[in-house]
Length: 95
Image 1 (spheres, rainbow, N blue to C red):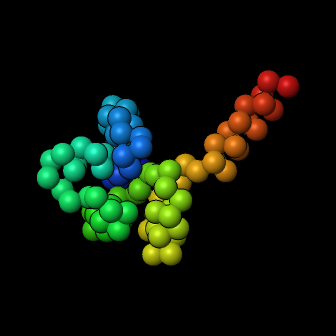
Image 2: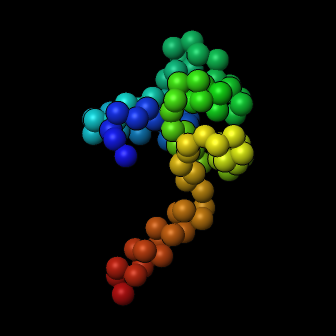
């Protein structure tokens, strides 16, 4: 994927936007956007903002991920299943 894509980081991972920006991605934080006056208090408003601005939503919120899925919006869901896959991969590297 090209680094010109816009990424919206949900509030649980605030700070990742800065790290991704340093890597050349155009990344934004829900928390910082809210501080700047954007009305992003609900999952619906966050998803709508991502859609209107052609962003990929990175979230740990399963319901937000499902809403993106249902509305054919790009997202990355960092749920327990994804975290478990990382643990298994790391265990395979160790053994």
